[in-house]
Image (cartoon, rainbow, N blue to C red; front, side, top):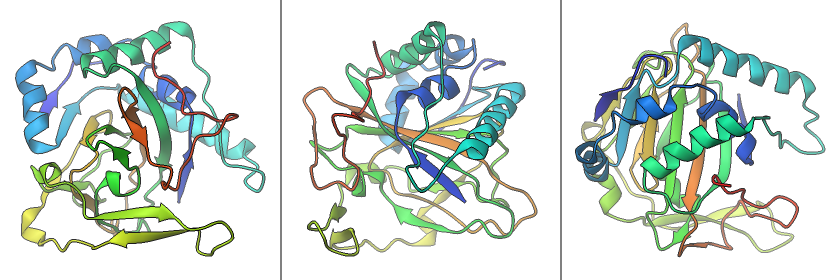
Length: 264
């Protein structure tokens, strides 16, 4: 389902709330954009497993996000670690919290974030998958992805494709940690599902749009064989209330780097 919010509204991985609050809530339009999301539309998200919010960020805000990641790349020292936080002020944090509350999240934490470059001509295919395969919780249905288009995402430069309603069937495959000292460090358990191309629908989105992604909806993206890049900032939230994060997940919080809460 596609909604329109208010006007104004290679791959790096890491974890931390700074990126979320600086990118998602950098603009002053988050509350007005979210005001367009009605209960009926949230119900549609529950039925489809994804929701598109067009014009959630302005062009200028998207450009500012890209400038920020350029600065981070220039300063990164990859061998020690790849974790980087974005600074944010109190007002911006409050705006991000408003979004979470509008979605009904009571105790959300940020489990990971990624900047995806998807360069022209070489941006690879992402096979059909469910995020819960990699970010498993008990019970399921506790993970939510937010996918922010920093450039137009079209069928030509590899927009997302979804199978509407596929989030209602659970998962049959998980990526888990291997025993200590074992290579590779992760492996899959369970069986991989086979999907037909005819089941998927393309979901193009304009620069500044945001897609909410249920943790169990099946989605993919194709090879970017166009002349245009497709930059995206995306992150995942987990509703931590009454939820157990699997100790077999590849990504684990530590005392030094816990999953930070979205709310103060």
